[in-house]
Amino acid sequence: MELITFGASDGYRSREYGSTGFTVTPLARVTGSVVCLRLERGGTIGRHPAVGRQLLVVVSGSGTVSNGDGAVVPISTGQAAFWTPGEEHETRSVNGLTAIVVEGPSVELLLPRG
Image (cartoon, rainbow, N blue to C red; front, side):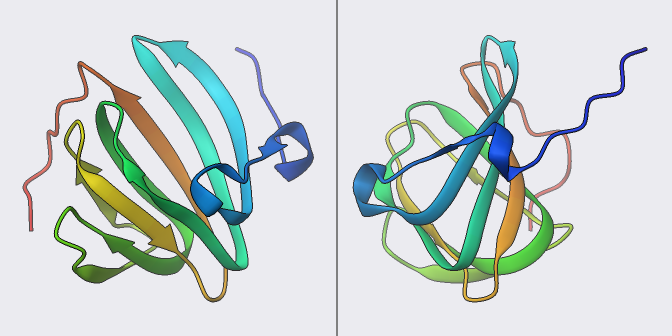
């Protein structure tokens, strides 16, 4: 077993899509990607299309996510959002949010929706 410790300083800051207060830490390579996303207080991942099937799992904090029609929904620790390829979306946080994102062609939801 290997124990891996990582923090925001192991990632890189992204300003893509007009994002602010946003750090990405790649975690593993799969057919797609697995990353840890950190949104600082007031941070935004700007609106953009999902490049593949994308699952965002909030592991701490809270925020809001939007979908293709722009509807904004609150999200917090223990919840996840799933977007389909090409679906426009955005994530924001007032107080900060950390999430694990799994993205790729073979991402399949196993938990019930809703």
